Image 1 (cartoon, rainbow, N blue to C red):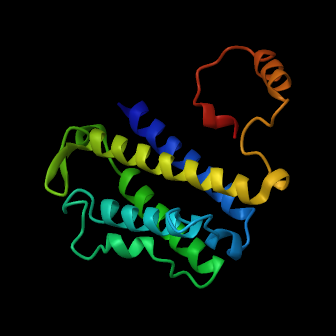
Image 2: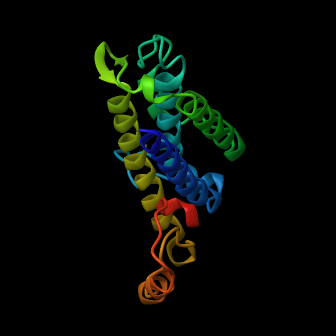
Image 3: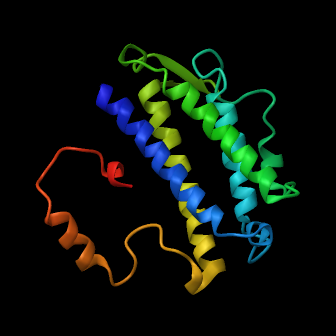
Length: 183
């Protein structure tokens, strides 16, 4: 189970890094862009992720993950005034997550935590949140690509580079490690 916790931390860090790299390519105006009134801007998605993370991971083991002070509906209203404000909140919420998860031990994993009074083992709660954040970070990356077009710097294997990428990977001896170790 140590490998489960280590893998989860690495996965969260991987998805954070994708978000970081996408956000770094955008101006504040880009972050606030919305193609229609029914689509959330990147800024709104970040605000929602922040609200969710702070609610879920603050006092993670002691309190319900849906905090009384959370105003989820407000997360879908644009309120950031600067990119720096957005990034400060982004970092704060990720730090809250990592401070909560990095102290867990194998003995904790089958303990129960609650989200809206629904019991989850810690494994289930981690998996739930990992998938939720990956979903939203995928939205951020997709929108950033749409906004930047051809000037977007690829976050993975660039188009037309798969053969070279695979040749480099297969030129090395087999080894057991996490895929993020090379990033």
